[in-house]
Image (cartoon, rainbow, N blue to C red; front, side):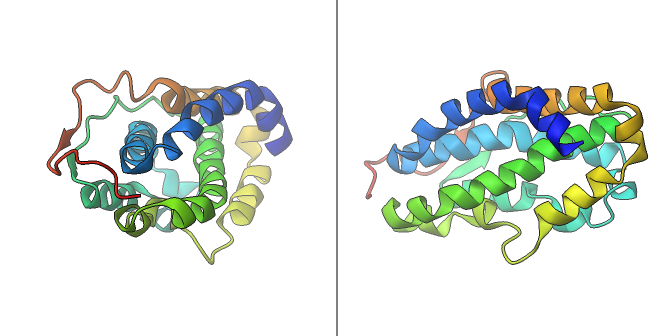
Length: 194
């Protein structure tokens, strides 16, 4: 199932990488944009998964959810209100596993981004890395893959799993632009210290 999801979303993954990478090279303002773009996808996806009772298929869901970590990082950077896109409909186990594939994969990507951010970022940016660090020391990807591969529903309805993954990637690609009003930032937009 993982190989099918990867093959079916490789183009979307490349678009997300191309969208997010430039933000991280733009100091604190760019990192804030990265976190806001992440929140525009993560917040509605996690909301949809909670509404769909994701803990029935992923018992350690509470340990995996990153909304709180992302909100804390944004608050550290002065963002107090984050507009969110409406949550997608993730009815059915297969569709949920497709969305989870993208969320859990983004956690892997975060681990790759963290070292450079820590090396080049300001003290404020370095302190606001709960989202990127979330799950450190746990084998969350490996355990997720085990759940995914053992899902009879995902094997029975692979098109639903692919649809869930594509819906999740769509939020990472366009969620920020469609999120509605601009975020409310209380910190002064000063020159980056990094």
